[in-house]
Amino acid sequence: MIVAAVSFVLVALTVSLLLAPLEALGWWAGWFGEEERAATPSDGARAPAAELYVVYLDGIAKAGYVNYRDVEGFLGRLQRALPRAVVVGDVLPYAPTRRGLTEGRPLARFWRRMLELKLRGERPVLTFSINVRNLLQVLVASDKRYAALYGRAAADAIVDALLARGYVPGSGTPVALIGYSGGAQVALVATPYLKRRLGAPLSLVSLAGVMADEPGMLELERVLHIESRRDRIPRLGRLAFPGLWPVWPRSRFTRLRRSGRLEVVDPGPMRHNGRESYLDDGAFLGGRSHQELTSALVAGFLASLAAPRGGYAASPEDGTALTAVA
Image (cartoon, rainbow, N blue to C red; front, side, top):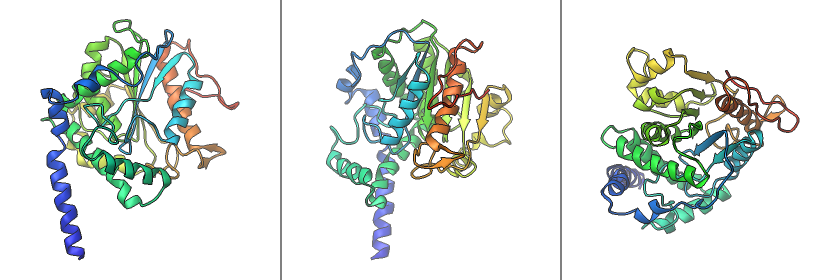
């Protein structure tokens, strides 16, 4: 029985891996996704002119346009701390066709059930299938055969979301991408296309990001990488992508690091996801929740992007000043 179960899992994973690039390839070929490309859920949600636009790309637990509670709390804190910024949180990083897992897919019913269980905290072994599915999409985004296609699709979704919030390409208004876990890889492959389409400075916040050695690293103005010493996932990611190994002096990652545009911050002992994670508002360090600490780090960095000469500062939240990481 155990051998049969393991064999079934291995076969399922192999088939899933082989089919993982199909959505990106189908998007590029125009086989499907035209309707999704024409509009986003935020169409018409205009905002006044801002000094900074922030786009959040969630981790591999993302299943649809509705964010989890911890993500909503994090984005809300950022928006309150940066009142003259526009924070966008409804981009799907792992769906080139912009279809959530729970809608318009052959397995939508299955994914809806998995999402319901995940939200209730039940059957984590089963609900982890959402993470596995999206992890395969991260692998597609890091595969040199498909990365350009994936990056184009992600850039299209990000640009449409920005336009719906009133962004004006060519205005020079800075744009910052926040990539949580695998979202950092999606942000990197989208960066070269965003740079050309927006004509604006781009920066990246890698929140425990897992990423390959990508050309987009050299097109970013600044990069903040937040990684806890307790979190093993980013370290495993660096082992998986040889371009990040220190033995390659000419890799893009090494050149980024030597340029002085990369800042690495340890926020304290936090887990990659779940309880005691970076966005957990119920776990505390030094009297402040993990979510509050992470938001403070990110907000301070973003404030320095909006006005690098010191003309813009993050607003204090709950009586605690947010300081830039610089």
